[in-house]
Image (cartoon, rainbow, N blue to C red):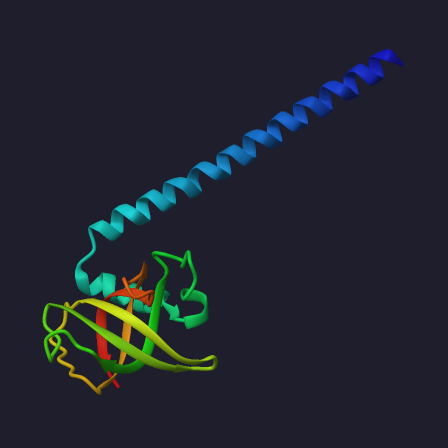
Length: 152
């Protein structure tokens, strides 16, 4: 009887060890894939990065972003009206306020635009902006660092 108990204990122990090895093997490739994706993003052209941003972006939610610790780095897009443009028209590096109409009311976003296109907009234009959440500006508005602006 002692032999049966000893043998079953050994089998359980070996089974648990092999299960841990399989789990470890599965985790390593996932980490390697993430590293490869990060490396490949750094090697992508701006057009490819913009396409990826548009694909992965979710609609910005003012309530979600207007908190003490917004989800920095999250890919978002927002539709709205351009106001308070720094130079009258968007140039390579511009900032402006974007007013969006949302279910919870109007949302005001500070947009820091790194313009990579030839799209020119001015105050009052209706646009869609794609970018990443970048905390808040000095006035407490949700800040989006954007690389894409499209007229609507």
